Structures are given as C-alpha cells and as structure tokens.
Amino acid sequence: MPDKNIQDRAAGAIMGAFIGDALGLGPHWYYDLSALRHDYGDWVAGYIDPKPDRYHAGLKAGQLSQSGFILKLTISSLIECNGYDTADFCRRIDEELFPLLDGTPANGPGGYTSQSIRETWRKRVQQKLPWGQTGGHADTTEAAERTLAIAVRYACQPARLAAAISDNVTLTQTDETVVSMTVAYGAVLGMLIQGHKLDTDLSGKLMNLVKCGELPFHSVTGSNFQPPRSDNLSMPCAGCFASPDALLTPSYMAAAATDPEIRIEPAWKVSVVYGMPCAIYHLLPAAYYLAARFHHDFEAAVLHAVNGGGQNLSRAILTGSLAGAQVGLSGIPPHLLDGLADSAQLRKLATELADGMNQI
Image: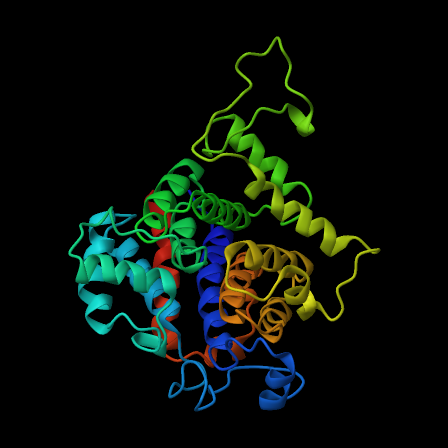
C-alpha cells in the first residue's frame, strides 16, 4: 500500500507537470534566444503572458496549454475509471477535445494543437477511422506529457505501467522508438515516486525489472552489462522494444549532472547541448539532466527548463514532473502552486489520483 510519502511524491509529479506547462506558456518556442531575452529579460522567473504575436496569444499567465488540457482529461479518466481504460480515454478525446479542433495548428484549447494530435484528429474525424488506426509518425513528446499520469497511477506496478502507457501512446504515435522512450520515461517517473533516486544506479534498477519480466525491453547482457554467459539460456530477454537504451539514458544524464568535470553553465544551456527542437530524443536527455542536477530544488529545475528556449514548454512539463516526484507536493514552492489558474481544481485532481494508488 502506498504510504503518505509516496502519495506526496505522486501528487508532486502531477502538479510539477502542470506548473511546467504553465511556466512555458508565455515564452514558448523561442528558438532565437536573443529574442527571448529581448521580450522577457535575462531570466524568466515565473508565469508570464504570451506576447500578442506569439504562440498561445490571448492566454494569460498561469493558464495551461493544450498539453495541460489533455493531461487533465487523462487524469479525470484515471480517477473515474479507477485505472486506465482505453475506451473511456478515447471517448473523452472524441467528446471533449476533438470538437474544439479544426485540424490547423493555431487552434483549440491552449491556442495551439501539436502535430500528433492534429494527425489523429484528421484520421479520426475527417477519415472516420476507428481508434487503433489513428496513430501517426510524430517523434514529439505529446504522449509522454499525458501518460505521465498513467505512470503516477501505476508507479508501484511497472508491468501494468508499461502496458497501459504503450497502449495509450500508440493511439496517437506509432514510431517504436517514441513508444519505447515514452514508456521508459514513465518507468523512471514511477521509480522516483517509489522513492528511488535519479542517480547513476537508477538504470541498473530498471534493467533488473527488465530481466525479471516487469518491463518489456530487450536485454542480453549480464549484470553490470557484462557479456551473456553461454551456460545461462534464460538470460536473454526479448521484449517489445528493440533495445534497453531508453532505460540507460537517465543514469548517464545523472552522471553528467554530478561529474565535477562536466559543467553546463548556466544550466539552461542544457537546451543547447541536447537540442532545442521538439523531438523526444532532444527533450528527454535535457529533462533527465535538469531533474538530476536540481533534485532538491524544484523551482530551479523548471525555470532552467523554461529559460533554455526552443520547445521549452514540453521540456518544463517533463522536467517538472520528474522534479515534483522527487520533492513531493510538499516541496513545491507555494507561489508556484498559487500562481496556477484553477490551482485548487488541479491540486484536487492530483491528490485524488495519488489517493487512488491505495485502491490498487
């Protein structure tokens, strides 16, 4: 049964994601960092309004993007169904999101609709395809931004976590690398909620879950990545994903964050090191690095994610959830919670989802 510390970390993971989303809303998608500094100064220190000619124009500081809207929808489904239910999730997308879209980018809740959601809308609404035939090839993090809620719900059950996240991701994105990296992110988040550290040992713990069949990744090596032994026929593990590399990334990022000979200064330049674009293989390394480096400082983690420009909204969501899972809801600064639009409702959703872990 989850204890209060686990529930605090679970709620922190959800509120961390909402905070990251809202912090990124104003200064979203500045690939020219000089333009970002011109518009908002040397340091974005909190919630800010989007500029009139930018993404999300018309929204106000502290409000959520469409990613936050979909995350709320996912959490509501998990709470009301007491777990992940594909049919209920799809019904909510059909009834609560798709009627608000028209297939164009600058439209819909939050003022912008991302690539994978637009592609799914076209297949589902225009082409009348059934769910299950709606996934596209976007290599972005929209699925990770909503399935983090599934990771919270099943944080103590890695096999169910992996199965539910895999199912949900493929509704909108079918690239196997994207699916594997999204499942890996969820598995990392689950471990942090359990109380494990984002450190150089975490990937080894994840690989142990692979070897015992809890996570569906491929593996042939022995302990500490030693060659497989010819006399141990049970060692190879043929999982759903081609390799376990997505599970190894977090500990390499943690090693970089703690190695005194590797310094990214200031830390927001992690976006320059790992890349500013929207693809998941740019964003996850940066999120892991920031969450490992600022494992006791939620505010520093999310603000450095935002100030790095580029796809800073997604970077901040993913970092915020990891950082929130480490410090817990009780460790998130009150002004960041209070500055969220509809903060009381969001906290209620976060705590109800965390409380639902007791019903597993």
